[in-house]
Image (cartoon, rainbow, N blue to C red; front, side):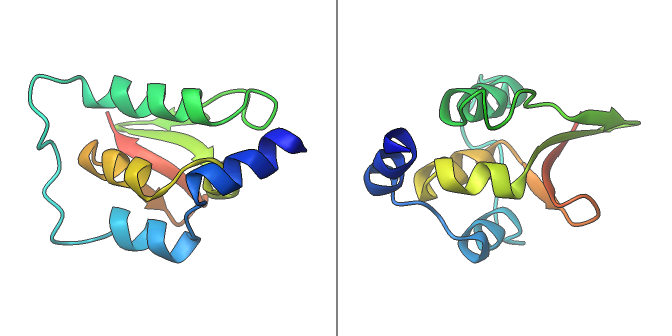
Length: 105
């Protein structure tokens, strides 16, 4: 419990609405950071932020050209606005069908 509360205070948990705004912004211009494996960067950020007990597998599944990641409810308590901007640069989005973060392969 202490870890969760401490994380909320230090990271200033992002709201679902703010995360949607950042990830779904039509004006976002992803891949600004050059010479980076954006998929690996997003996966590493999520693995480092979200405790294993909350989300055992960052990659939940894949279909054709889309990779499904953690459920939004598992992500929100552990990331802040700066993290969301990094995920936006990695071109992650919210898949409304399964209510999870997602990226194209």
